[in-house]
Amino acid sequence: MKKFINKTDDILKESLTGFATAHQDLVQLKLEPHFLTRKNKAQNKVAIISGGGSGHEPLHAGYIGYGMLDAACPGHVFTSPTPDQMLAAAESVHADKGILFIVKNYAGDVMNFEMAAEMLPFEHTTVLTSDDCAVINSTYTTGRRGVAGTVIVEKCVGSLAETGASLQACKALGDKVNTRTASIGVALTSCTVPAAGRPTFDISDSELEMGVGIHGEPGRRREQMREADAIVHDMVEAILADFKARNLSTQNQECLLLVNGFGATPLMELYLLYNTANQLFSQHGVLITRSLVGNYTTALDMAGASITLCLLDDEITAHWDSPVHTAALRWGK
Image 1: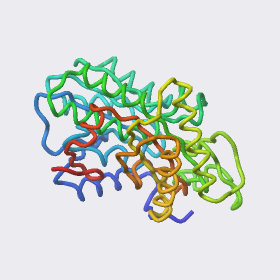
Image 2: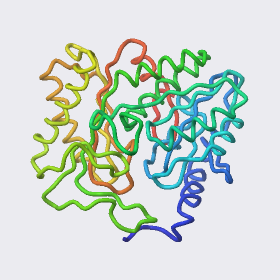
Image 3: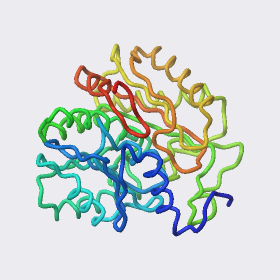
């Protein structure tokens, strides 16, 4: 294993310190327990908090700032943050209108956020993201996994919270965006967790993993490597089938298309995937009116990508388009 590491036990603290120093105009870091918040605390709004295991950067710390998160709780690599981190973050950013947790649907994240919520003295609720249509159940989750669609939920809910909307209104929008979003990922290589020192799974140069999770969890099936058009075709068909199974029409529907890299895939290849996905969705009557391409929910050094489709309506579109200013996502302000 060759990585830029001093000591494995120090990687999280050193990385977070570097992030907070590089973006000191936007965020501040608290240690023991570890969490990050906006540099300037927002007032009189629902406080939006997310978190999860590290290794998915820029998720979640990269989305702290105006129009998105108030705080993020990073666990160790691919490990859920602890309840004391979540409690400390909530106490730091509470702004008199309640706390909304945005939690990816992984068993450890769900359990620890629930434990923290039970101890919170403030009004609170949770949006559980579950956009991954590759696997219905796995040993890592309590149902569908929360993956790159989490970014869309955080953006839209964060926008609504800036307007002074109520806690229940923010939750309702988050749940709606999650319901109207589907993702599927594909991996060409494994990722390597620093503490393990070796790839999470073995895969040959002639194979790919269809439906892989963002921690290297197995997907739908192991397949032979093919041309990109054929790979994207199967991913698009899986997403369309998922919406159909849930009685959500994509015909003549305006949509946001997110092509997300897992950390080791060049932008040249991500834009190639986007080009094919856009063409295929359009052939099925889907109207791609919003796009995002890049590394937004990664899996350390995994080579691979995911495709996410979100069915837009006037409310979701308005909150997606609204100003945002974070380390990893910014426009309009």
